[in-house]
Length: 250
Image 1 (cartoon, rainbow, N blue to C red):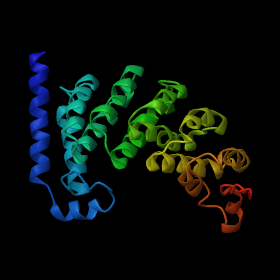
Image 2: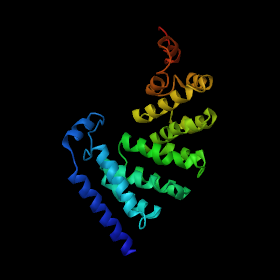
Image 3: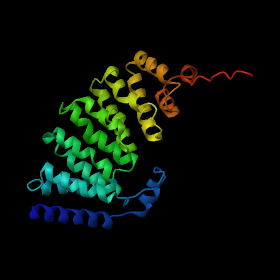
Image 4: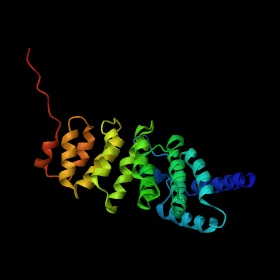
């Protein structure tokens, strides 16, 4: 156990030192405009990041298992820096063949300890979380448990993970029960995620998605409708506007 802890501490230090050494102020300034609360990271060049990632995965393959990468990931996520969380996500991605339901639940706890922006959340959904369903490791209904999370990023992960599954024959009837608990969510990031998901499904299943939007247009967040109808013609999408209630004159 002591050996495992020292290994994790050593790798944490190595990753941190690499990030500090390759920090780039100009990139931090460029990235900041995409984050409402500012960019909390080092501004690494993407090529520098990718090269080092491949190097570490190759160097560590004989000593790091999925379990150890999860332990390392917990600590990297706690730090909360963009690139260190990105490394945690990519390390877990490299262990895809070993995923289990407990892996999914363990990763889900990252939202409680340090996942605090849309970018890390979306990459986690695309590179890792979607794989659990593509590979039939767990059932889609496991995502419904996330809809009541206090973390808006965990709630956003529900629709964003589903976006990745559209290319894998995702059916609207599987989606609706998962996102209905979120249709009244106040988070703009959750609303945007749902809208993007519905927009992608609309291209394939227009009738089903339009019926769903008509059902919810007067009750759901406005950004859901805005994003979901973005690819419709200007005149056509007006039918999905919220109905204005007539105010009776006294």
